[in-house]
Length: 80
Image (cartoon, rainbow, N blue to C red; front, side):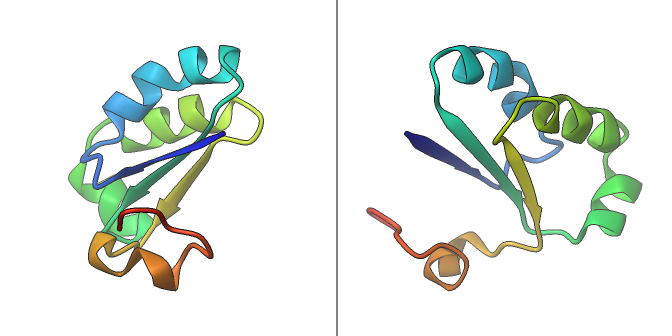
């Protein structure tokens, strides 16, 4: 199973639930609109939240993702 969180601000929500999703065997894709450099400059805990998320196998953080155009980034998008 996969779950996508779009526009997670500073990625704190995704970081917080990463371990639980990992235990449930659910792959996380956390997305934000900003590019990585901008995101790191705007959000104080961006880097540490990314590290937390990516410390779990299969979990991903994707930068520069416009949630209104998810089909451009993901092959299969349900209810987008």
